[in-house]
Image (cartoon, rainbow, N blue to C red; front, side, top):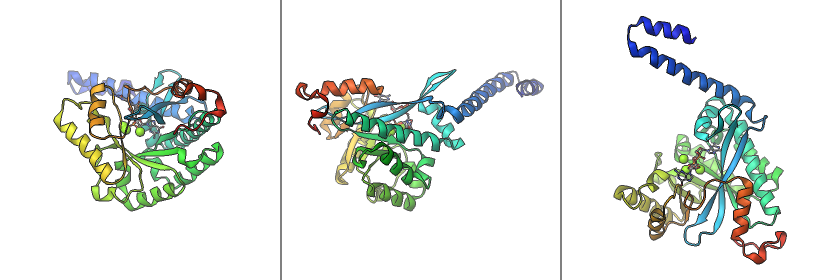
Length: 299
Ligand code: C2E
Ligand code: MG
Ligand code: MG
Ligand code: MG
């Protein structure tokens, strides 16, 4: 209890102890409160997905989107995933949340296609416990079946750390997912530890350069060396490579010059609500193709 803790802190005679204790209690209480709220948030419809375009670095053509989850919390307002994904992982709520994300992303993508928009690949983030869950493959298959989305239009993003935890099992699972016809990419590449020799056995199609290496492109020689090495490595392994967090023209110029294939970031677009993304896609289509189903596939 807060009062007891403060009382004890006073007893120790250290003045600053009381302050820390109260602050820690507030943090823990907020965390518990979020945790409690998570339990019903899926059923109460408090989660939303926003979609950030992924574009071809040279043409600027939108070929895909990444689904990013937000929590419209009844008291705290719109929360980003860094505030609640770790809690969802700890508490096991990630399974229900992850399933909702998969289903919603697949359904949304199928709706866009049925509306005659040029087909996009949708990327869904999968966190460690989700990836390790036995039922992941089944859940993915179910999301595809229920939405009617063809597997070629779905991609999962996993981080290196997830894969390296249990390499053999991860490679087997990735193989199953690939066999279903979906794509896989490694998110935040370069920040985790992964063995380069293992990389060649992953059935993945894309490496994603973490935004921490992108931020100082044009001014930091170390980051430039890392980014261009990742691009070279990806191409040697016959993988595509995308840079995340591209915010400036200077960063884009560096990436283009060094042969990066794709990019994602505020320079092109922030994550968008479904209707905003639809508008953006309509603007990208040639005027003659703007009439629904008659649109030719532009891919
Ligand atoms: P991530 O998958 O590496 O996503 C990239 C993050 O960078 C996103 O943050 C995105 O909004 C942000 N971003 C995009 N462009 C820029 C830019 O130009 N500059 C900067 N500074 N940031 C940019 P967000 O949406 O807060 O997501 C954070 C992380 O939460 C994601 O990192 C991902 O690991 C996780 N996450 C998001 N949605 C889901 C989900 O549905 N399920 C799971 N399991 N994890 C998710
Ligand atoms: Mg991602
Ligand atoms: Mg990332
Ligand atoms: Mg990240």
